[in-house]
Image (tube, rainbow, N blue to C red; front, side, top):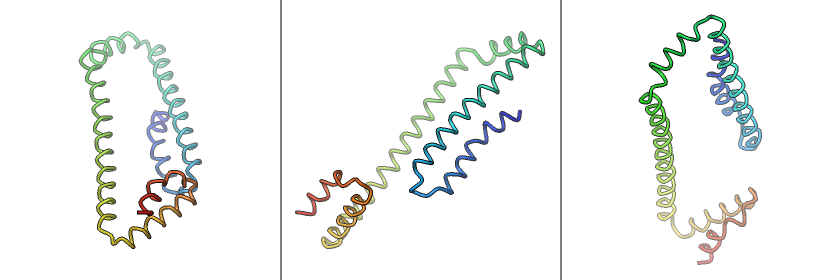
Length: 148
């Protein structure tokens, strides 16, 4: 039970640590996330191993296997689980795409409504920021628009 609680609470722990990080700690964040994935794998395997050991020692293996075959491992239950998994992935992808498109179109509409002097000033600021971030080569479009 304790390992299951630890496994389920690891996401909360990572979320709490993310809130404490700054932008400059991105690499540390990715390392922490991968460590969490590794710990989830270890704790998940430990929970499964302990459940198997418990089932074998308690002589309930036959009853558990009978129940699993009759109620859990049916074709409809497995197919339903697979469909539910992919449906959640699809909904997340669609919602994420909608959010990105909305942010992009709002940004473009805002930029289009700025006076020309403000647009050029904004483009220079973006170019300066990209230079600081080491992405100057990706701003060919901004520099091209600035020349027009």
